[in-house]
Amino acid sequence: MPLIAAPVTTPPDTGGGTTTPVPLPEVGYAVATYTDPTGTVWPLTDEDAGWFTLVEGVSGLGAAGYTMTTDAHPRGGARLRYAQPQPRSIVWPLYVYGDDHMQFITRWRALATAFTRTLRVGPDGERTPGWLEIARPDGTRRRIAVYYQEGFDGRGAQGSGVVSDAAVITLWCEDPYWIDPDPVVVHREQSATGSFFTPYPTVSSSQVLGATTVTNPSDTVVWPTWTITGPASLITFTHQGTGQAFTLDPSAVGHGALLAGETVTVRTDPPRVRYQDGSPDGSNWVGALDWPSAVLWGLAPGDNAVSFTLAGSGPGSAVDLVFNPRYETA
Image (tube, helix red, strand yellow):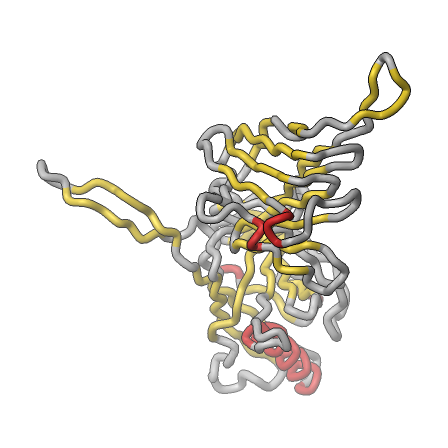
C-alpha cells in the first residue's frame, strides 16, 4: 500500500550537527533515522544529536526468516511446498548522553516515549507503528514499520544513568520486508475522441485503458492499490500472466455507473474498497466486487502483463495503479 507520510517535526534538543553515513552491519555506509507515530523524525547516526547508534550491536537488517512447509519424498528427503516469511526483530543499541544529568534524562525520556508510543492504541482502536529508515549515500532509501518490544532500560552498571547510558532496543516488525517510500505509479486515462467525419466527440461503450507491462522492481510480490475515476459502469482488472481477475460493478451496491470525476479506491491487501463520497474514510463498497470469483491479485517481481477495461468509459475515465516496492534487506 502507498505510504502516507506524517508531517515531519524536529525532535527536542537535538544539538544540531550534520548526519554523515556510518558503516552499519549487513548494510554498509548509510544514514539511519526513526520516525515515531506522531511524525517526528529522530536521527540515529548523528553523534551531535545527543544520542547515536552503537553500530557493533545492530542486527536484523538482512533477509527475512522463513518457515518451511515440506512433504516427505518417498525416495528420501523432502520437497518444499510453501515458504512463509516470518516477522523480524531488529536490535538497535543507542547511546544517549548529555552535558549534565537533566539534559541527559530529558533526552532519555523523549527517546523512550518516541519508541514506546508505537504500542499505544489510538482513538480508532489501532496501534500506529514507527518507521526505521536506512538512506544510502546515493539518495535511495528503504524503510520498515516497527513496534517497540523491549530494551529501553539502560545498562544498570555503576555510574550509568547520570550523564549517559545505553539502551539495547528490540524492534518487532510484523511485515519483514523493507519498502521503498517512493511509490511506483501507473496512470492510464481516456482522452476525448472524435470522428474524421464529424466534429462532435464520441464515447465507446468499452475501453482498454491499460493493456501494458508493469515492472515490479521488488524482491517479492507487491499488492497494489487501484483508483478508478469515472465515467465508468463496469471495471475489470486482469493479470494476463496468471489469468486472475476481479471486476468492480457500482450497480451492485445500488449506485449505478460512476459519473465523471467520481472515484473508487481498491486496496488489494488487506482487501478494502472505498467510494470517495466526502466522508473521512469513504463509503464501504467491498460488495461491488464480483465475489466469490474475484481475485485481488498482486504483482510478481519483474514484468507483469496487466490490463484494466472500463465499460461505459468516456473522456476523463482513468485508472491509477500505485505500489511501494518491497525488499528483503535494508
